[in-house]
View 1: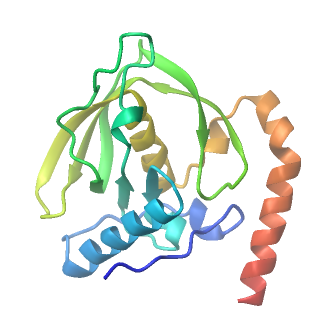
View 2: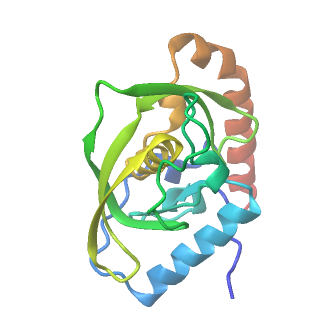
View 3: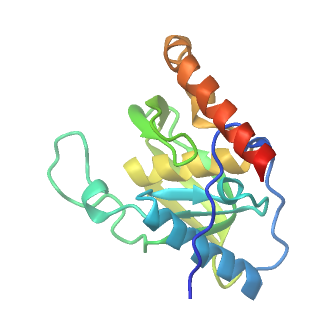
Length: 192
């Protein structure tokens, strides 16, 4: 049975912590990944990293619906990542290659930042190395929105938040919302 975990919001110190590499994919870590997928689905998200549920293991989960996994640039509804099985569970993920010449700016949101979103420029295509649920080393190429989701979650594992990638003007525009969210988070942590 899956358990819904508490999503940490901006201001929680764990969101800035770097993940600790997983030595072995244990049954406990598989359960954590399953609970993370459940929590992400309940919150209507497409990705979730361990720090977002108060943990520091290097694991993130991604589940991009098929309708979002299409060419955005007008080539019809063909899937960009037809061979990538969802949900994707990544232990110790790292980007080993990224398309520097092919990038895209797109609105992003984050479950740890309710009501806040902004445009972030990221590589269109990445190659990610990781351990799968069975602890096997894998490498896969991700394109488009799935690549964006993976980069967003891998950033979380490094303690980098999507707001860190906002342009200066956007950072100024959301400063008040961020301050309020951080205050609410810290109040909640103090009461817990």
